[in-house]
Length: 253
Length: 253
DNA sequence: AAGTGGTCTAGACCACCCC
DNA sequence: GGGTGGTCTAGACCACTTA
Figure 1 (cartoon, rainbow over the protein chains, first blue to last red):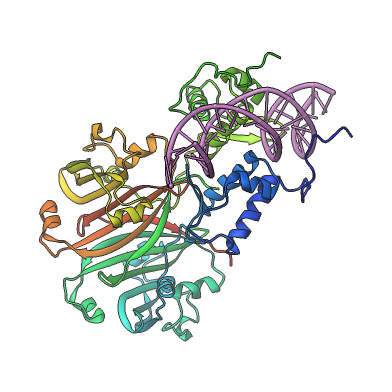
Figure 2 (cartoon, helix red, strand yellow):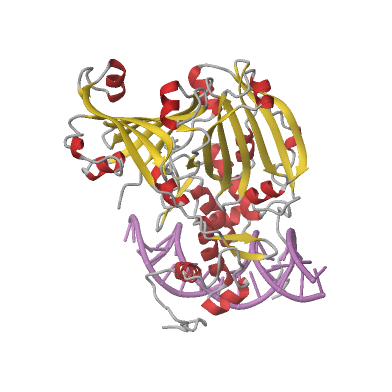
């Protein structure tokens, strides 16, 4: 055992966790605990080095890693700042109607316009990759926030998946969640979005004038086997709703 | 020892580019040139240090950056390997205007309406998390397919990033690609989408009637450090365009 | 001018892989 | 073993911000 050059075993002399990782989690926890509030500055690097008893290079590795996580932001001659807590858990998912409602502190409800078991038309069959005439479960709903109509949702589900759906109360339940809770692995949703004028029927349901801009989103949701589970068309009153999402362009982590 | 502790930098004494960045591009170019083929090993770090005349820490910063780009893969006791040029299609990217054009066999072009260096307003400054009055580069363009106007694009870029952009021909070049080629790591694009009626100016550019539905997409594109690089608002004629994407669902929980 | 982050170095030791 | 990447340090200088 030759001399250990200096390194007084500060607090944690453990091999399992690299020092910079320990520092990173320590810093993140302090920030999460509110010791340093969002928007305010961290102590200077040289100071943090003393506090954590690590070198500056190591500290900076921890700080840089926290930047990638979106926790910190560096500012050259000024210091390290805590980023606004804008953290989304699933950054690549579209914010759902329910999520939007909760973010805005509103109550989402639905009024069922139609709910039936029919047979698929040629177009529907093509979308689902099934034979025309195959039974399809259909639900049409007006979706509301605090009782104000926001959108009209037309959804189709293959009948074999939708067994028992005629007993579900879709005024408060999400069709999406209902399918997921049946154990199906929802994987991806191919989506198109466009702006269209409202026709008279839609305008009636939304209490807007015919011809008013409407945001139309069509989705086909598939499971891991790429089997279509749900096809939906939602039409939002243009001035009452806004889709929110975050696209990624980088490498996976 | 004769000392001169502050060793004069050897060959590349350039201030503008950090050494590790020079090393990174040098390595990437060598790999791209085929000097090291995909799947094979790079020379040992200590050797590369000599070749590039830089310290190991600096070299490793370059190597790590190339990992983030997907060019290299580290293997602990074995070496650094050139990653297979697997071009993954990131599932959650929005189909770009150019991609849409190619898929449909049409030619995308742009007409520049405005291109100027101005100062940021309060709103713009807030979006970019910079001080109001900070210089911003702005480009307004009409985007066309086979000469038919499809959308109007208003984009803002911080002036320090946009250095030299006044010499770029944006009638055929993508603003997005231009930024990416400068070496910025575009990471995510926070997006909102809504349907609005066209105002008279917009309607004029798109040759549609005022009040016609328009699809409005606003994005803020950030790099890995979550620094805003680009803010844009694109308004598509409702009956001439459709956004296409695919969302994935993080399903655990 | 002082304070802060950004870059860089030389050298050390550890953990992993393979012979 | 010997070679390789992974971590860590102390100290230096540079660039940016603020006063």
